[in-house]
Amino acid sequence: MDKSIYSAEYQRLCALLRELRLEAGLTQVQIAERLDEPQSFVSKYEAGERRLDVVELHHVATAIGITLAALVERLDLAR
Image 1 (cartoon, one colour):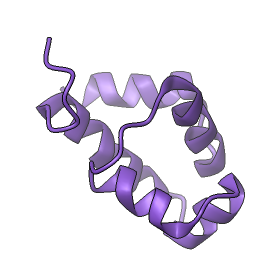
Image 2 (cartoon, one colour):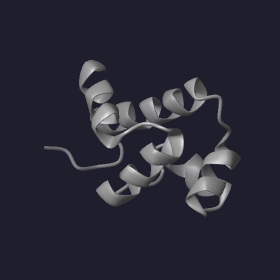
Image 3 (cartoon, one colour):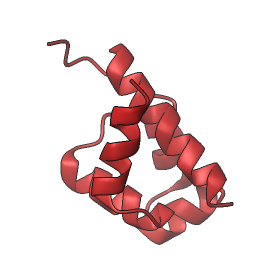
Image 4 (cartoon, one colour):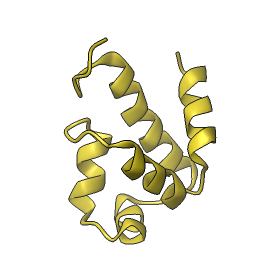
């Protein structure tokens, strides 16, 4: 299993996070404020330059307004 941030599966997750943010009508700045992180944090994980651990992914999902379970389900559907 490829664990690189450059794997196709991780890139799908990054694209999905961006898509969910846009569907929610939120900017990177708004998500960053909800996470108490700089905007560059959001930019880097959306671009695949930064790998999120499961706790961070949970916080991101919450900031977007979706459960982690729903995010994973969407990710599975994107296969």
